Length: 457
Ligand code: PLP
Image (cartoon, rainbow, N blue to C red):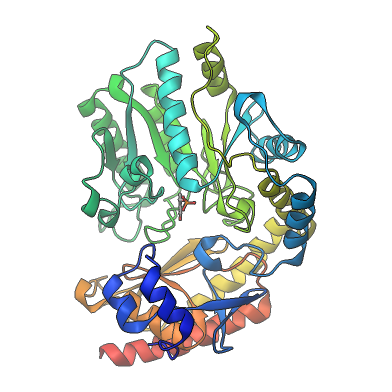
């Protein structure tokens, strides 16, 4: 697949680098994709070939791949204070100011920010806080977490347990007991023929309520959801979904945890995905777009009721027993502040809505007559194209044909980076894309799609 399998970097990489989410056999057969340089929305490989990265890396490099201001913000902070932590009441001005900014941006009035270093840690933190919250109110049996099929919440043991993806469980004996999954709100795959969207929503809420009653409401701590499912195949919920779900959660004293790791910071055409889908969470996890992934900083923003629980729990003088060495990092906080300042200067939310509508239109144009496209879905700058054997019935391709991966590989050869999630191909480009980028994505996708159609005939 790649022309540079003989390069020195590739040889070193093959010999020493154990990759994330990579098939080892395919890697040794085909070699690694070696990226050496960024140029706005594009990346450049060892041979000087340019690719438009329509996945912003891992849905994260919202400001592209070589933003100079972020580099300068980091360099300035490294010269001033290159490290400090947040244990034992320590802080630094950059972290303090960022904590305020995040509370304001998320609309968690009266809340606070807890810093971590990855999306997985942020989600694990929300689970610990949910346990602490119920324990502090004399309800220590409320421990179980309900997540959803096709969800992705990270790779650590608890975050992995909350994923609704077999790939995240298989090798590790996960999910842990007490981590359960309800239906995925997928309009294309889970909604029944003849079922209206409203009927679908009430079935999903009904299923959730039956699960709660079956398990025992006194055993359930929280429900966790991405506003729009990302890694599970880009799945926006049906209209009214979160309103119906949250009614059920409120009835049984179950917290709502909002995983904004992908959807946060403009991705869905609002500052946070929760605004797009009408969700009112008790806590929000933030990562990726918070620094455009130029620094591994992440956060949880908690509502006042969670804060009160932390305070009550530690009333006797004990300390809140949770935290990470590199959390509230001054350099990460400086990069995050600069990232957010740039989003504000670019007026990123209206930009995403406008350019997102153009990307959607372009994807619709390119895919509309394809004999292998069953569904195009998404919002903001987050779209999925689902490939199927028969668009009239939605019959999927046999998994062994790996059609999504095939299209992604052909697109890559054509200078377009997309991501296959089973047979759904994802488009989540840097938020700074412009009209030319949209045209380039469209033209390259069209070519790759035609080649894939021929290959499967
Ligand atoms: N939550 C969502 C929705 C994600 O997509 C991811 C990663 O892609 C995570 C959590 C985990 O984030 P991290 O890889 O930073 O731990």
